[in-house]
Amino acid sequence: MPVTMRDVALRVGVSKQTISAVLNGKPGISAETIARVKQAVQELGYHPNMVASSLRHGHTNTIGLILGNVTNPWYAELARGVEDVAQSRGYSVMLCNTYDSRSRTEEYLRVLTRQRTAGVVGIAEEDARSVVANTSCMFQTVQTTDSVRGAYVACAHLLDLGHRRIACITAIDSSGDVSSDRLKGYVDALTEWGVAIDDNLIVTGAFDYASGLRAVDTLLQRTDPPTAIFAHQDLAAIGAIAGLKRAGLRVPADVAVIGYDGLEIAALYDPPLSTIVQPVYEMGRQAMTQLADKLEGLPIVDLQPLDCTLVVRQSTVPTLTQEWFSPPISASNPWRGWRDERTAS
Image (cartoon, rainbow, N blue to C red; front, side, top):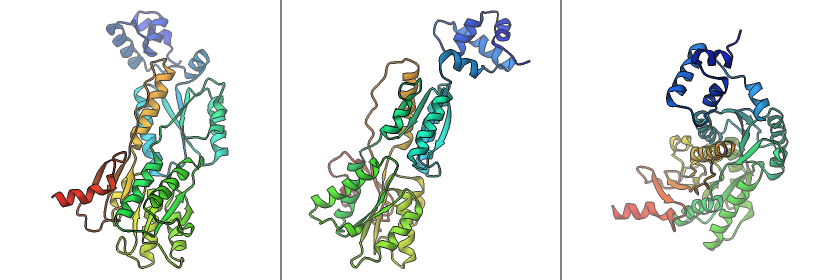
């Protein structure tokens, strides 16, 4: 027979209500009693009945995590931040891989609400979020960084190096917000530097390696091809570098390339990729922390603004002997610091 809460209570010599209070982290229980209960739980091999618990509380201790594509290292890092906090606070996480499909996102949300999931963490459009409205399932949006500013800084770095034919490889996601913001940053940078926008240099791609390859094939067919490329995501940027090499071009001597997101692989590629680094792990931690606080009725602390960093590597500046990290991109001219630092030294 499975061990019950009554068995644990008999072993410790307290009521079932006390056992429940300890297991749910409620206050007012002495440290000695808590230690005895935990020891008895371990010795007896007691596991709470999650089905019964969900019926009593209206939800389980499961958290749904809506991901665009788990094969993308960006989402893997976000999941790591969410799971680390969830595990430390007694929640399990169900990964929901949507492939940036709105219909899959909505279906996952419906499944999660039917299964009495306590809450959901994700980056989802408003109509998908409305699925959980008027249910016990709580939705927590991942706080994003300033993509307009990040894209502006990436392109300003290229402009500061003297490039004027700068291509842009976009990456459409399910909501379109990230893509449109990074495209706006690209347009703002070129406009402020007095460079006319050439629609022939804007190629629609995706958050993957293959789209970078395809985009380069398209761009190299232009009458006046680019001398630099800004890709909306590191995997696409790496694909672009591979495409340029395949065409017999040198990076960055013939075409400079900069990406976005700061994936670990960006530093390991040849040449190492300049990019805008996002604090993705911390984004996941913050979102799960705020969701857990809401579920547990704790005071909600406003999320602290998260900033990006420009890292300059050899895909844009071949003479660098080691990578250089800028101050936060909210600083006035973070794209110039690498040159100023080298001059000072």
